[in-house]
Image (tube, rainbow, N blue to C red; front, side):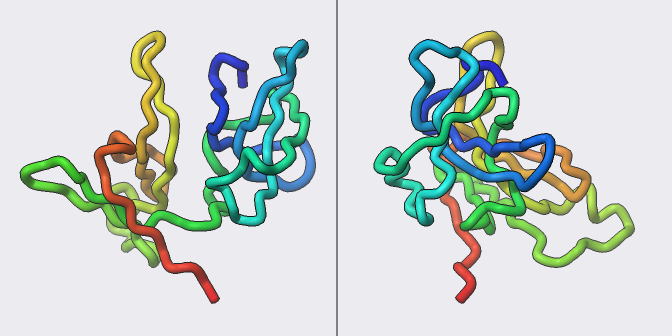
Length: 153
């Protein structure tokens, strides 16, 4: 990634050439090296207060936007448009969908992503993906109600 593609508070995942991926949040940028960001990878689940944790120096070439889905601690179950006369609810399919075309029309996961429109306009969006990892929808983050799967005991 390039520094201009990142912002403080942005969810990212570290994807090394070898080893495990890690989810994190950009805390700051190196003062003199434009190719390094400081990323908080372990906030003990306290992601709302990530600024209180130490960020690790990370090369931008290893960062990818958004969290790696299989590692998201609180998976999104559904989102509903909040400001619509006829709100639509988009829900994640829990089980593998039927093989008769259901994979393309079923939602496998929903993520929060920063989407760029045009040259400079960025907007946080909830994006839904089907079982082929194709984006099926995107809604402005501030215009939806979010429901999460319950935490596993």
